[in-house]
Length: 265
Image (cartoon, rainbow, N blue to C red; front, side, top):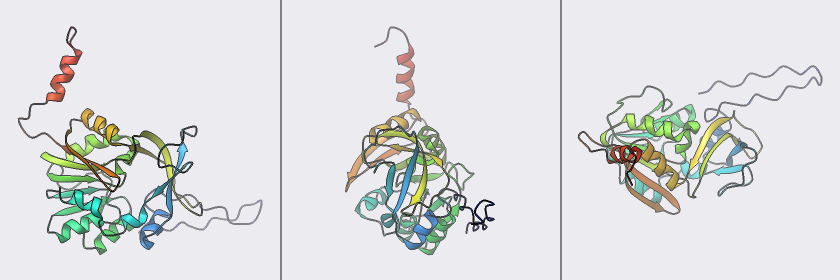
C-alpha cells in the first residue's frame, strides 16, 4: 500500500492547513480509491497541449475512464481477446486484474504487472498472479511470453508508443503475439495528463498517448511487429500483432531498403 500523505503545516498567512500535494499517478488517490470501491467517476484531465482541439471521446479537457468495466468480470469484448491468448500471458498494466483472473481460472498461465499497489492487491484477491512493476522494469521471463496484453488504453503508457511497442517486442517470445486495444476513434495524440475525480482531487501529471487503430498499426510497423488481425466488439477495436520467428524474412526491412535506393518505384 502506498504511504499516506503527511499532514501539511498551517500556512503563515491563514493558519489553515495547506492543500495536500498531488499524489503519484496511478499509484495512490484518487485512482486507488476508485479501484477499492469499483466505481468512478474518474477522468484523465489533459493539461497540455492546452490549445488542442477537443477530439472524440473528450468532454472539454476531461476523458472519462471506465472504472466500473475494469472492475467487473470480462465482457464480450474482453472475451474476444482472451480466446486469442496463448500462454504464458503477460498483462501489461493489468489494473484490477479481471483478465489475469479469468485466464488463471481457465488454466492459462498469466501474470499481471502494474505500478499500482491497489491494482496488484485486487488482482491477487481475485486469484490472479501480479507483481508491482513498470513494463520498463526488469520482468520475469523476458523474451519468453507467448502473449502480451495491452488493454484499456495502455498503449498510452509512457506517452511514447514507439518506445513501448519496442519494449513489448523484447518481452514476447519469437513467434509470440501482442493483443492490443486501440482508441475507438481515429486519433493519434500525445499529451500531458493527470488522473482526477469528480471532486477535483488529482494525482501528478504524466505523459500519455491515445492511438486509434490506424495510428497503432503505423507504430507497430515502425517497431517490427507483423499485423495478423483486427476486429471490434461493442465499439472497442483491437489488433493482433506477431513478433517474427527465427528465419522469418523481414519484408518490412527489405521494402524500406528498396525505398531508399534511387531510381526505384
